[in-house]
Structure formats: structure tokens, C-alpha cells
Length: 282
Image 1 (cartoon, one colour):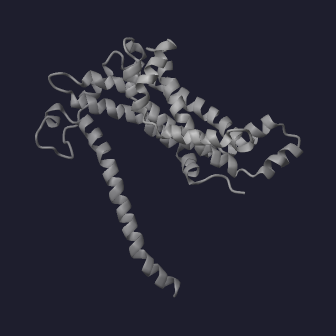
Image 2: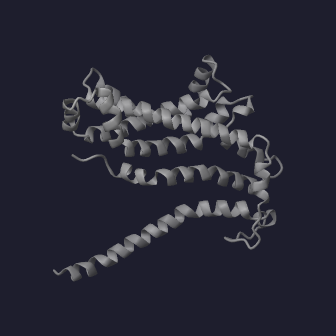
């Protein structure tokens, strides 16, 4: 069978796959489009019974109400501090832990890896109450530490398990060659191994950042009285009112919350693709 015939045979399948991908992408993107559209719609169009997927009179009133909230800037800064701390700390700890469980042999190593998987199976909701009492006993309630520590604990098992494959894919011959050339273990760890597994660190960092940035459960449970320690998702509660919800403000605040996630994703997208695609090959 000639190459032209093969091309003709494969083209319908390829076109069908591309069409299906476009449909799925449109279905995923439509809620985001509607959120942004609602944020720019005037109040009359939002409350109208005739929903239209466009607006001829875009307005910034909803965004103005969001930024006029006195604590909005503080909430935004708190979210950056919590998410940034979790991303950096989880990446460093997961890298060291993944290297340890991959390169060294010690007792209960397999048991430890299984525990990492089991930790991922426990629902977060089931641990919220025990974590609340734990934070209370440690005096961490109403502090950013009560948000950083739980997210760090939930991010580490996934990050360690994923980075283990990247570390394992780095040939041991490379490590032996580095030692022969006079490199210490610390130098090999940070100057050779760390750059090679960096795409995996980026992939795990995206997971850590998104889960921490969008967290509402812990922020609502652990920040009880000191609202100055609240994070950005708590700002949405201001627009939920007993008589009538401010849907324009809710959509505008949600749009603002989405921007840092998009910026973070754009900054790491190249590394993310290689990180999700696989590890280093020998």
C-alpha cells in the first residue's frame, strides 16, 4: 500500500479525532467563557430571564465592586503567600524524598511507598475535623500556617510518587561518572540530578499550586475569627447575600482568581509538557 493510500485511509480518522478534541475543548472552555462574560455583563443582563452568550454593553461595575472590598488585596496577598510556600516547600521536600526512596535501600521502603498511595485515597473532607483539632492543639488556628501545613501534607505524597519515576529514569552510570570526576553527592544532587528532574517538579508544582490556590474548605474551617488571615476564595462570601446574591461580583471575583493560575500555567507550560510526557531517557 502506497504512502498516499495510507494518508487517505488515516485522514478520516485523524479528522474525527481532531473534531472530537475541539468539541471536548469547547465543552471545557464554555464555563470559563460564561464566567468571564457574566463578569462583564451589566446587572440588568445578568438578572434577565433570557440568557444570551454575548453582551452588547460590557461593564466594569462588577470588577469595581470587587476591588472596592477593603480586604480583597490582603486576601490576594495571603493566597500568594500560602500557594507560593506550598509550591516551593513541596518541590524541595519531594525532590529529596524521591531521591532517597529511589537511590537508597532501607527497611520499610516499599511500605513507605505504599503509604504514599494510601494517603492519596483518603478524602480531604474526612480529615478536616481531625486536622482542626490538631491545628487547635498546636495553636495554629487563625494563622496562615494552618493552611500551609495541611496542603503541604496532601501535596507531598503525589509529588514524591511522581518524582520517583523521574529520579529512577536518570541512569546510575551518570551518577557514577560524576563521582569519578570528583563531584560530591551534594553537587551531583543539585547541579546534575535537579536540572534533569526539573520538568517533573514543574508538573507537581502545578498540581500543588492549583489545589492550594482554589482551597475553600481549609480556609473556611481553620480561619475562624481573624479575617485578616483569610485567603482569596473567602472573598467570594462577601457577594453571597441573604436576600439576593451579587452574581456579577461573584463572577468578577472568580475571574480575578483565575488570572494567577493562568499566568502560572503560561510561565511553566513548556516544562509542564515535558514533565507530563515522561522522564529522562538513558
